[in-house]
Image (cartoon, rainbow, N blue to C red; front, top):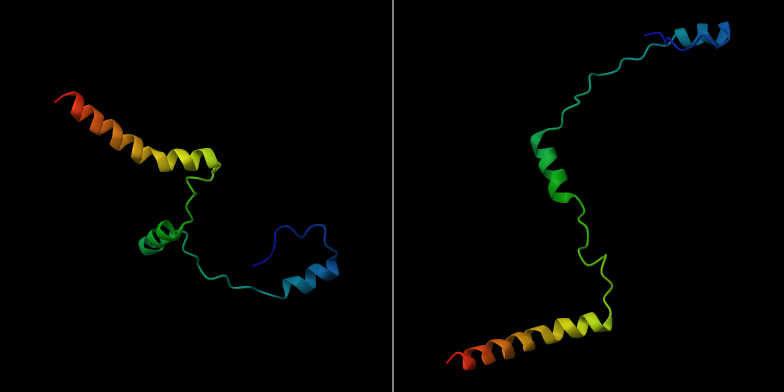
Length: 81
């Protein structure tokens, strides 16, 4: 197969390059289903906490939330009894 983009090359070089032929095997442009599934499963995921800075205030809120929820539910049950 000759190149169509060799107009700017010197004639001697074009003649030498035309001596060589390259056989290109047919390439499948579609992925197999197993490859697509593997790409999906192995794709890296984003860290959901990456955008939130873990400050001491946030850690304190995370630790105190279950305690506040328990006290709130207990007070609500006692209030409505």
